[in-house]
Image (cartoon, rainbow, N blue to C red; front, side, top):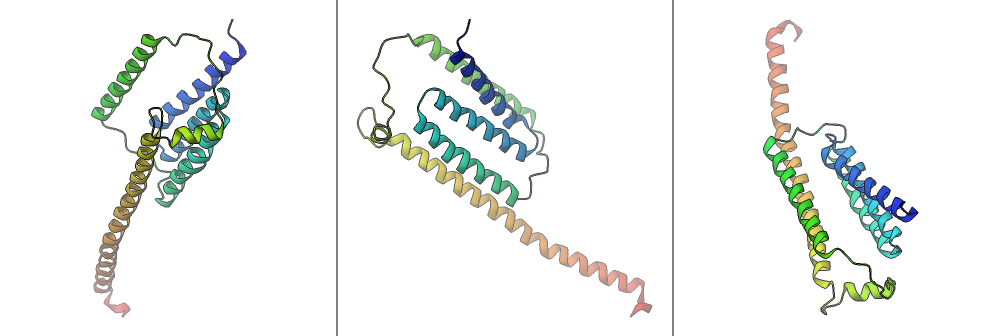
Length: 198
């Protein structure tokens, strides 16, 4: 019989996987953002379950309170919240399924190889000071390189959002003269049809 901790772990894992699957399969972009929100909250719950409260708090503040809120604001600014996204092409669906199968196979091979044997070790030191030291350390077990790579990734995402927004604005500015020209042609045509109104 499974323990309560195992039941909680499987429930949180089901929430993360289910919400993530719905986030990538939903046809409405706003619903996808909401499902992504629930998936990231589930990941924070896993951190709480592992008793690393600082990482859980960072997950909520940065991803749930920052990234997802930024995505939702971007959706509302583009006025596409209620529209359905185009149905993906068959090639994209096949490529996505192959990528998912490859990822699952790779993860399963790693888990099967190492088996994660239970050993008696010292309790994990998850204090804020220790996490900060390891995060910015340049030693063998430091994480300064991944930390900088993630910051560059976020910067690239921000630049991409700005470029997309500028393209949409340019399209609207190009379409505005066309609308004015059509209105002028329509008004001139109406005047020609009804010369008595002048």
